[in-house]
Each structure stands twice: as structure tokens, then as C-alpha cells.
Image 1 (tube, rainbow, N blue to C red):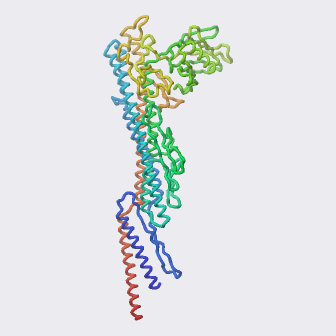
Image 2 (image 1 turned 90 degrees about the vertical axis):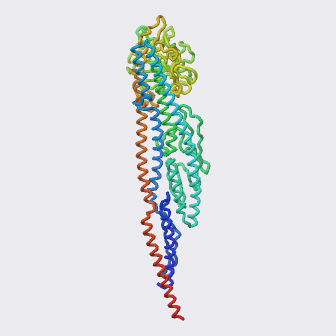
Image 3 (image 1 turned 135 degrees about the horizontal axis):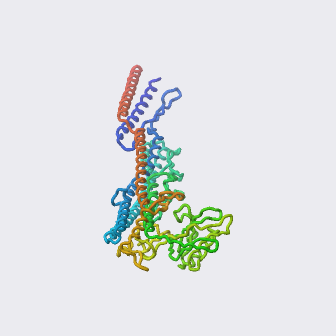
Length: 631
């Protein structure tokens, strides 16, 4: 190697050392800067035709980062934020419902109502005992009102949060678009973009908490960002724009608006479709998915549970069984049933054995809006019946029966259905059907009394006061009277004015005794002993196997259900957060600056710099000697 070649090598070495010293010094200075990744200089040496060093390019600065761990960490952020949001809301929901032992919760208030009714059974004529029942019923109604409104407020809060989250995501995407363009230009110009890539990573990290994303890099060092289901959020250097219209007031069972993304090319898609359940994970996880799931799924389900409690509590006290009387016409037997008391939502229950020898159950449900017909079998919670809707809009029992005849002519053609001549429904078996005679096993109606006396032991302790004072019959019209009922349930004003109605159920032909416990016992049994099926859409049970029990059972089960939901959400959140923290540590270790290592490396660079300087000094001395010899 000649002196000139050695000198070039030393000069190039000093240049490289200086560049690496600058980068190392920057690493040390930014060791505590959040998101700063360790940098290193890559050197490319070029040689002349004789094998001597002709140049060294040291412009390429590389980031030291484990992209696989980075991807895992970013992906975990969506799960963690999803879990935290669900856990935070379900914990508040659990507080609203209370616990089994909570003295102010639904379960405790139902227990107080039960105890008050028990006391009334033992002393029905006692005014204080009557007032205790009224007070307990009023406390129950007010708690249902309050709980429903608190959940409605939570839904509104979630809707407003979606608006803020949409603004934040738009801001992040806009920032990514700007810095991505700068990185692209720097890459094309051969200029280091490592500092800008750190900033871009920080933006993608924040964005990953809102939505489940797939992030990849293009050949030009720019990003391509998609949602989990493949929709483009950032493509070809341009970001999509998100739009969300909050709802001023979310009504009962009303789902809010979707978040709509519009790409630079004008294509539109729903980021999280309105009403889509995050539980199916089709849209992945993330803060936005959790917030929409809460608004349109979890909280609506909780409101349905309150509506179910309010509805079944009302019906259990008010509804009475209208019994039928035996009827025989020739060889055929069956029953006659009065139908004049039917109101919308009331039912007629028919059990019979068909000509094939199979037991059949038909529920005839009264509706005042014939456009609702035909009704689906899911109109009742009984998984074993066939539901047949009947039009009672005429208000005339004879027409009711005509409509029933027509409906059962299709649903149960092997029965004989008629008007008994006194506007009572007559249903008989048919001894002529083959291979077996059809037989009617039972016929009864579930009727809501329209008065407080002389219509049986049932009493409308609770009424619907959303539009005046209305008897609750669970009518299916206008979306269903049950929907939102927990927000309007109230103690019957007639009972507030006269608590003796808890005992006085008959005035003709003679009034019952003021010490008669019959009605009080009926009300107590309705709450604690009578079992039935409960709406599976409220979250407990399924359409094929709905929850079955007493009203008191259902209230306790609902409180326990919310507690379990909150506990499960917290467990999920804690597990995801632990995973994210673990990945965060590993991710930070993969890119962070180790001060000890950098200081040691800096000493090496300084020594190398000094060595190159000594080489240059030696060459300089030799060159001077040669010049002196020549002279």
C-alpha cells in the first residue's frame, strides 16, 4: 500500500469515526427520550482498480429495532384498550345493579317487597302492613327507573366518546400521512430518515390502540395500513377520513350510528358497522370497537334485563288465569272460554293431542295491530309452543272468535273451533280424525284485569306512566310495550291513593273481608312461587333453552350475571394488559439505548479516531522526509 492510499484510508476512517461518534453521542443524549431507537452508521467502502480504498459512504443510518416484537406489541395494544374499556363500563354497570347483599340494590329491594307481602298475608287488615308493601313497591319502581336512566347515560357517554375517538384517529392518520411523505422523499434522496421513522412508529403505536390493524411497509419505505377485515386506512401515501355523527338522545333499544371511512379515492366503508358485536371479533378489537360494542350490545342488553324485570314483575302481580269450562257436543269434548277480557299482549293457551298422537301447545296472542301478523314463535319465551297471532282490533268478542277460527284452521286443522253462541270460544276435539281422535287437554287465557276489583285476585301494582297511566299488558305494538318499560314503571296511582286495594278484590255480590289474605297470598305466590320462561334476548339462556324460574329468581340471577360479566371483563383486561406490558418491555429493550454499551463504544471510536490521526501524522512525517531528500 502506497502512502497516498494509506492517507486516504486514514482520512476515510476519521470521517467514518466522526460520523459514528456523532450518532453515538446522539444515542447517549436521547437515551431517555420516549420512542427513540438506537442508531448506527453503515459504511460502504469503494476501491480503485488497484485495490486501494477510493472512498467510504457513511450516510446510511440504521435503526436497531426488532420489527417482529414491534408488530406483536402494536397488535396487543388493541386487545388491551378493548379490555380496559369493557372492564371500566361493566364495573360501573355492576355498581348500578348492585350485589346480592347490597341493601340498596335490586335484589335487596325485591327481598324487601317479598318480606312486606309476607307480613301482609299475616295481617291483611293492618294499614301499616299495607303501606309497607306500597313503599317497597315504590322503592323497587324508582330503582328500576334510576338504573335504567344511569345505563342510558352510559350509552350516551359511549356515543360521545366515539365522536372524540374519531377525531383523534383522524388526527393520527393525518400526522402519519405528513411524516410518511417526508420519509418517502428522504428515502428517494438517499438521506437518512431514521428520526422520522421513530416519530412515525410512535403515531402507529397510538393508532393501534384504537383499532385492530395490519401494518406493512412498501418498497419505498412508506406504510400500508388496513383494518383487521382488510379495509384500507392508509394507502399510497394517503389517509382515509373517518366520519361519525353522534346521536343527541339514544332511545330504548336504539342503536347508534356507524363510523364511516372515506378513502382518498372516494370509496366508503364502515370502520365498525353500527350494531356489529365486537364479541364476534370480525372487526377485531380496539378502543373504538369496545366503545361501540358497549353502546349497542352490552348496555342495551342490560336495559333489556331491567325491562324484563319490570315487565315480569308487573305481569306476575296483575295477570290472572281465565279458566275454561268443560264442553261436550255429541262424542266430542273440549272447553268453552270467555274471550271478552283479552287485551293486546294477553294470551290463550291451548294444549291438545293431534291426530298423529303428538302433544301440541299453541299460544294465541292478542294484537290490536293486524299488520303485525303473522307472529313468529319467538313472540313468546316458551320454546315449546307454536305462536298464533289473533286480531282483536275490532273490540268485539264475536270477531275475536271468528279470527281465532280462521287462524286455528291453518295451525290446528284437526280441532273443531267455534263460537258457543254466547261469544265464548269453544274448542273441541274430533273423534273422526285418523289415525287417532284429537283431544283437547286444556284451554285457558292469561288476562290482564282492567279494574282493581271483581276481576280476580290479580292487581296492577305497577303501571306504565310514559304516556299517561296505562295498564301494562306487554302489548307488541309500536316496537313492544316492554321496550323501555323500566324507565316508565311506577306504582299504580289508585294503590297509592288506597292501599286497601291490596286486600279488597271483590265488591259484588258481596265485599270480601278486610282481613281476607287471598289477594296478598296471590301476590306473594306470584313473586316467589310461580315459575315461567324469561326473554333470552336479555342475555340469559337461549331461544331453545331460556332461563326458567320465579321473578325473584330472575332478579337475583340478573344481579349475579352482571357481577360475573364485570369479573370476566376484569380478568380479560388484566391478562391482556400483562401481555402488553411484557411485550412493551421486550420492545423497548430491542430498540432502547444502553448507556454503558454506548459509552464503551464511544471510547473505542475515540481510540480508533486517535489511531487514524496518528497514521495521518506518520504519513505526514514521511512525506516531509521524502520532500527533504528530493531537495
